[in-house]
Image 1 (spheres, one colour):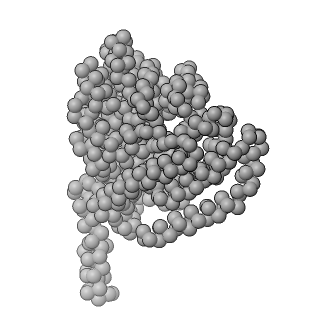
Image 2 (tube, one colour):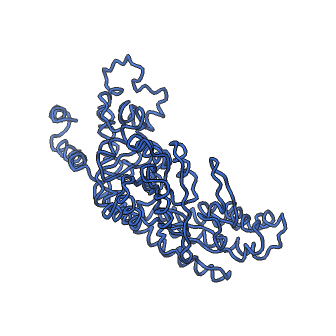
Image 3 (cartoon, rainbow, N blue to C red):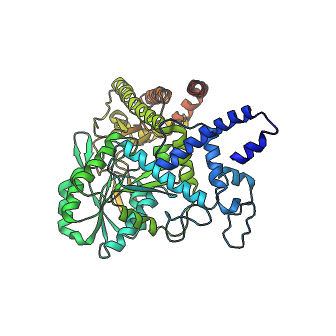
Length: 501
């Protein structure tokens, strides 16, 4: 209620009581005022009532929520289901206009303000995470792969003769298909093995630039976050190469915001050379539903060109999700999550080392990968490749998600390009292995359960004699144990949530 309504209310309720309520509301409004004024993520988390009040204030600024609105157009924010309306906090118009995803909508002042604030808050978080010199960013309602495609299509207009994209190999389909979808020819640069790590072959990249001609290369498409034993690309050296040859540089930073090392590489690359844009996923870095990404860079003009390349308006859901999440966490909450993730990474690494020793395996030495780990499976591989595959199946049936079992010699063809040793980021990695990662939001209980179940599966695989029905028999024998473990995990997580609240 405004001042006038409160004064009228004094006829019904004591003025002292109303003043108390007024001060309570003012505390909410003060938080909103600072947010709009500063455009930065609040240091401390907001409570749900403040967030909901803020979203309600934004929603009533959109034309579909005007009490006297008379809509006679084809896009009037009409929603048939009240559930859908509530799910979106009645912010129905989306973001952007037909010519620019970052433009303000006349019909939707509230949604437009939400979009601008979200971009500003995410930019603040990216700076806090380590890329201090980033100049701008914007949220797009597409996952990482399609967001990379948007970057490549924008570069097409700046380099019309270019047809190639130089791509240090990483065996992940969406980043490869992003180049194909944009209409370019990927030039795959195989990685070099240094110890256990797969690293960028800078010599091969320089040679390929000389062979193809810099003017025929759209960009270098590098990667930070990746599955071990591949490690982040040598961004500093690549950035210098790109600056030297005047070649654009696009970085796939899919889940790198949560890693200070990945963000430092981007910051250093921009400082010593050239990085035109870096793209990161919303769900992997901010724990929101899949469907959004952030495109960020160091040149406002180029970022504006990318936003204008997006055809039409866009869904506001990814922006709304990340805004609510970051207001709920605050800077302190997000920093606590980053710190916890790093601590769990060390814990997971130590636990895997202990387990590896028990089975005469070893944790591969990949110190340059700050998120993913790899456990060798040499002994299982000596038995048969089927045993390696079976291990992955056994883990999945025991509700272990995210672990990747990588056998030797798997081949796959994607859009006409043949990859030997697919999933291992090279043609012939020395051994089969299993991946596990410490990503944002992981808890110690997750690691403990994973190690316990992996231990049980390895024990079965080591003892088994390649009988086809061994896994199903073992699954039946351990069904009650797995159910007990799951109940314990749910109880432990519930206890953690109660402690946090």
